[in-house]
Image (tube, rainbow, N blue to C red):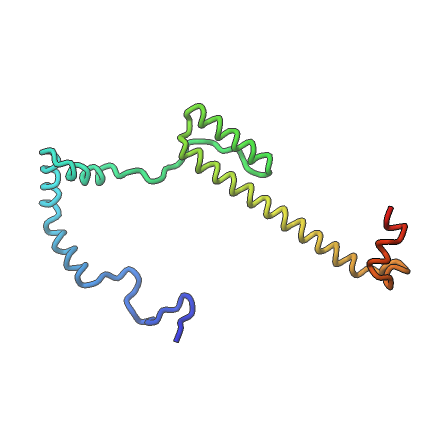
Length: 161
């Protein structure tokens, strides 16, 4: 029997975030010894053990993964705004106000905006054209056009001009 998306095979099973017995025991043992372990790591770091230094520094000042970029991106409302934003990003990169990675992320954001704008505009035009075609299809055709084959209509002198 297959399950539906979001449906567990065992609805009465372990709740999300519940810890197993081994995890609870390990945490209990560690909590009792945490101070001694930390003190040993600090002493090893002080004596020059580089891996202990790395462990201590990772806890004191973890590597920055992401941070807010201190850059005011121009408001994005149109394709012209996207061009202006990319120009501002390039200028800030050249002036050293942004790193290459930060500029790349901002350009990705600006590009995503421009692609979304393009898709939205395309969809609006398509809907408008489909609406107009439905209206045109419901209008009666001029006399003489409806019964003539397409080849004949194309070869008539009025259409050729």
